[in-house]
Image (cartoon, rainbow, N blue to C red; front, side):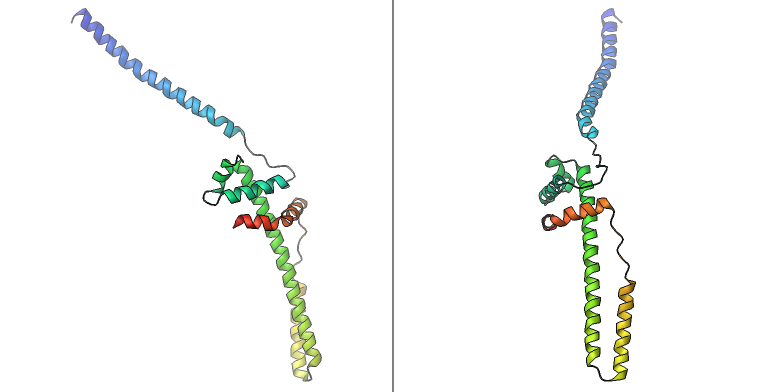
Length: 181
């Protein structure tokens, strides 16, 4: 082989070894740039408030996100509005807890009213009954309803944070529920 041919062979060999190295460096640099661009997103981790209380700001952005999420996911809507999806998820969970507590209270009150009306109606009927057998049947029904009403489990007091969130959501319940639809 001539010296020129050997030089050309070595040059091709060296070039073939350097090209992949350069490509790897470009790929590594691209990966490093991508990692740097996501760092602000990752470092912006939502930390719930220690007291667990909702603010008017939370309710405002909850309603905005729900309205914006008509044709996309809530996470996408939150991101589009510049709201941390993790914070939105935390707010949604607190609102759902408050709505459940409000509904439970409403059901308990309605049940107590239903028992009271049924018992009052049976007592009114009992006053007009002249047959002893019918009167005993009605008295038995009244006693049974009173036992059931007395056996209704009393509501446990809500934890202070949930009670405060429930009051805040109750004040804006119509707006919050309208955003759910």
